[in-house]
Length: 475
Image (tube, rainbow, N blue to C red; front, side):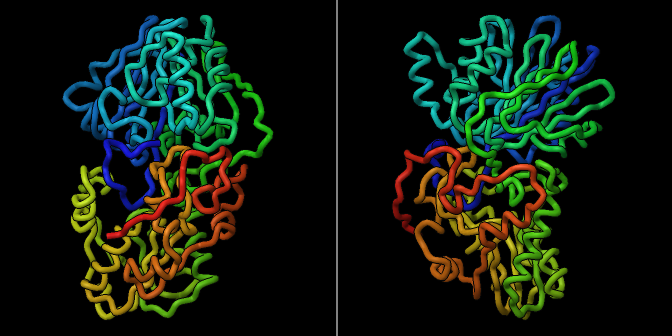
């Protein structure tokens, strides 16, 4: 992963993208189905989006920079043809700059005719594969790892898209939840570790695949099951069939941050309700760390459910401490660090009526760089809070991620460079509390698979060789 466009680090983890696909037994307006599915996945990527539709042995697509309703305004959605297969993508860049040419789906003409794919995740051997492909005559149009995937599929397909996908997956390392289509097939595949989520659903005679169950709900589809780690699902005129990629010899390791922050609370991932997991995070914080306070609140939106769980166990009343401006985009989209930090004040504001003279517990999903937490603590104090006790639903983030989260170096992580007490002092809170790794796992009890906790303890499914521990200079 790379810091896109050389921009300064931000406070917070941000996941790469979301994917959606639909296979219909009749020719109809499948683009609108994908549109609503992407709308439900907008939280997973806000930089660009696109939809590709298969019809009459052709694929037509439209991509643009911005949010789903912005990109497909002005009749652009209606201009897409009717078809029987379509895929879509919402993107937040980790590998490759935030440019229109890097927007997905990737659409190309190759050995299987017109083909399109959309990818959520991050390949860790992109550089090696890219150099190999260029040496063999490949020409790249983008700087994203998803195009590497596309060229590998074409290279190995020999006219059989399923063969191409299987061989490409055998060559790549890293995380991927992939949807691909030709004029007659929709294929969905999840990497052998299951790092990124992928689900299968059905709406009357249509089959749908998506990054989260909330997207199934948005299009009226019924959840069938999760695509399993290492599974490849093929949907065509013969129905639905599946097989498995070669085994890794290791247990699945799904990203636990899906439950902490990335996924919508109304989604269910690998058998666990995201809402229930976040509520349990708050309950566990209350069970093990009792603090005398007048109110407990959460940072909107991902900290609110945990705060309610904390209130249930502790008996401390839940109250809103921060008001959120719903019309402001996420702070990391701002073009420089100064604007990102200023936008926190535009996005959030203290509710003086609820906090003045009060001892406040404020719960957030995580603390990455610390700048936003520092701003929030100061905001609450200026709003009249007597005490501010900060709690994090995640353990201390001490290590980078190279599997689809945009934190690439130790220098971006306050937890890699400061003790908990030093972090508390830096953000200005009266106390600072984190969940432990084991408590976080317990909050996600009932999951079908194990978890990747590399950003907390350095235990990754894949080795992290390219990063070095360095020091971060906090301003």
